[in-house]
Image (cartoon, rainbow, N blue to C red):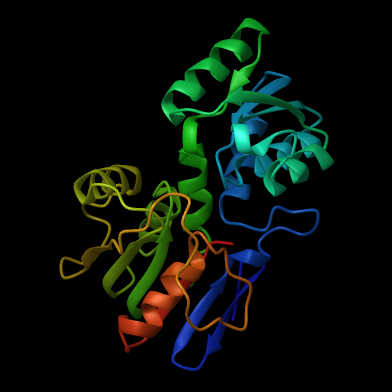
Length: 261
């Protein structure tokens, strides 16, 4: 099955939406890229800033969109003492797409974001929302939902924006349960509040649909614990954690796994 150019593949008991194939090289092949492009296409500013974190793909996505739209991208990223002059892979990918890299002394994400936003505003530019919480990403992801019923849908969760889009896309399609697998631990109520608000959850899903948060206690920098590896590429900070959870204790009904890339 092909949905908006990306396949839904069957791997044994599991149906997999291959969002890792959502954008051709040089990428980035992951769900939020379409929403980033749609958002920046509406912005009049030429200079665009974005904050990367330890393993974020945000800078890569924004650099790619800027390169396609003829805009200038500034990628702010935290540098720790142990990093020295070494760049991490996400920053190298952004630089390869023409982004200007500007390091910040490592610290809390919210503090770094305000520093970066102030710097960009002083230059007359536009700062992308932190964690790329974009309405356009919700809308673009909703378009990717296959028009077929599933008993369960497993969604790896970072900010929750992709989960919100998947839930919105399933409006009017029978789904019993959405499993939101957290890539890193945080308050369950905050996750549900954001996903519910961003998706417009009330009135969209069947009354019997459950929204289940799965928190395995991962820290932000943790990669997936040892376990089986699927025959498709998985992000070790999100997709692979959710897949290994599903293998160990996930539902064994008609299940769709949303591989965010």
